[in-house]
Image (cartoon, rainbow, N blue to C red; front, side, top):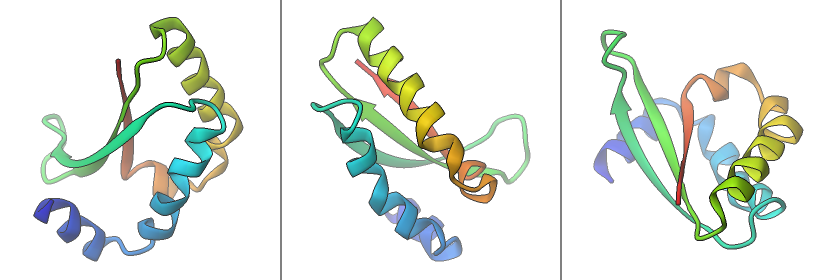
Length: 92
């Protein structure tokens, strides 16, 4: 978690957006858990991203459809500055 805290200290504008993500995901996937992890992009030197893993027991096809809907209706409406620093992973 230390990497996550350090990342958020460096990018404090992400905190309010991160806090709103669970409620917005819940509009699409009711049963889920989230975890945060900071990972380096192997193709870009010194580029770190905050990864949000979405764990769910929902059927794979349904989960992908719901995540697509979440992205279209909510995720793509937030600023590019936020989206370029946060990546989402769906884990079934």
